[in-house]
Length: 619
Ligand code: ADP
Image 1 (cartoon, rainbow, N blue to C red):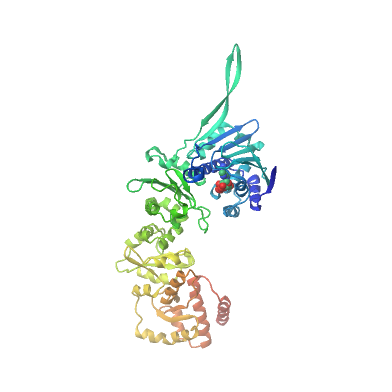
Image 2 (cartoon, rainbow, N blue to C red; image 1 turned 30 degrees about the horizontal axis):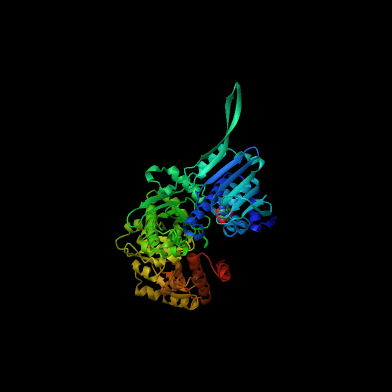
């Protein structure tokens, strides 16, 4: 008796895509199926050591590949955990993870790029429909007596029926499409496995037939001989000594492990011996993973205990700001039967984690010696790294060392370089926050600092406004918001004389009255380049901090309007009498200052009206 089931809508969408669009890199289907088999072996390995029911189970984990080139079939078999009827429905008929949905959303239309995404998103199994028009999965779950067959042609439906199967595990049989029959060949299979799966931790055996000519009497007869060969190294590469490994080995392992089609930017492999014994192998990818900024990002680090896989979905293995790291932690000291929940509070793991973070940060620092490479890294991961300032207090100084900024003077500037070139009298490190670099570079506030010969960090990443105010100091120098009164008071601006104050008193008073609802204060300055500027206030800074702590957006707060008394426009204005015109001028000047400050206006209509009136009068 077989039962028909329909695929979930998203699976159909996915299959449609696999079958009709993603042609460029078809061979990866084999990597995906082998990776699933390896996961299944990992799971059973773990359970056979920890689960009461499966403890006695004797099994030597292996993956077997066989093919029939005449029929065009290819089989991938493992003796891992296997699937029961329910598993088959849940795992090969529905999408449990949101990953596949995001996969569908992130497709670019560029086939090469899109097929590279398949591995990252873990839609692995279905990729087999790129090359097969029928797939049969026969599976028996470890510990069960019944086995089930799953059959589908990838067109909307699949069928499940009982079948017979000796050993636990799964066998996936692909009925290759005519144009893909080439995959049923020894040479193809070997070369794909060499490329992608050489360092799968389990042996992969390939069965094939070899023809031999033998002499029987005076006749030559062709005989077929059956052979079975292990075709991968099957070593947990991280356990090998560094001296035995070449960069190419790391690169190949990384590709198979992460599903990334590109080589990693760099890697760090280390072994700790002493009170704790463990091995770590971490990679920094070249490109940010698709889910880097998603809340439900997938952890890229796998935890092993004495080569036995424990988990790959523990986001606590590394702090969130290092979520772009891919790699392995393998501990000799953790107990195998520790539950995944308890892992989180485990002291051994906490120690490994803390040491790993330091290792990775110091590797990134190493990377920074090569400027071009570091730029590449920073473009992808700089923003994420900054989050660490907020969450990893212990490593704050280390993280600060790694940051690079665009400043009023230079690009890719480190805080160290900034500090080293500070003029003697400069008291703090100054930064200016804003929407984008264009605006920041044109800021009238920046002008004040430039006049003093002070460099200012220009910060336009969204995370900057959260993170930078909490930094406090770098190497004993305070970091200050350049638009704050406190920072501005450090500039040693030219004093306004008593006479000057008197000269502009009437204008100041007039402006205050006109703009009383919109600005906090109207003050005078001799250090601006433009006629006016908006300056942040202490209340702004305090409010911003408070809102941040509550995780809310900063409301609009009134700022101070500064008038540049050295500017001819302001000087002429101070002698102007017409109240109606002054009102217009005040409006226009404030709004121009706002435009320079934030690049946008809420009251565009009023602004335009004031401008039109003025233009009309000037004609
Ligand atoms: P992923 O491997 O990323 O989870 P797949 O679509 O490749 O996504 O597989 C879906 C699920 O099907 C797996 O998570 C696993 O539970 C199950 N599965 C696939 N292949 C096997 C196998 N050979 N043995 C046991 N379970 C498997």
